[in-house]
Image (cartoon, rainbow, N blue to C red; front, side, top):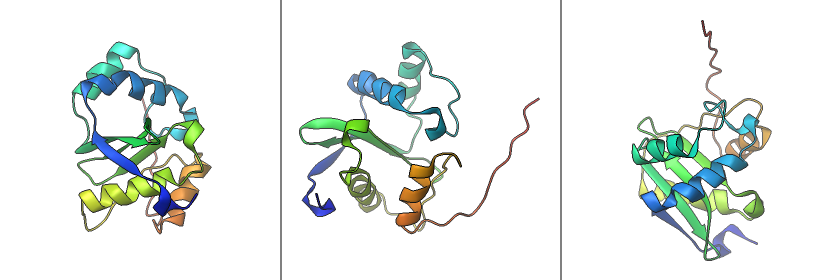
Length: 139
């Protein structure tokens, strides 16, 4: 399927999306995350969603279903996650293009776990360049 054939909609996240977003988070492999080390409780997740942690946060709708989410932080960082059943259909590319069109910036960033080879490949294929590795010491 070509990217331009996909009809998808970015819809702002609302409280009723908490269960879908929790299921989506639960699908993520630990290597996909750079910040979450363990799965939060549903209650913790709802608190997080309702705190409006991102500048823009959308549910991605395609094929009359919720298929993923995409967000933009205050620092212009993009985060994308697509349900496993919908990988390889060009949804992430289409959603990212729509996000950028709706929220123009002079640059966009993507923080990717170095173990997340799929995300690294995705962003490289969309002309993102590696600018830093970040190290942390916890005491």
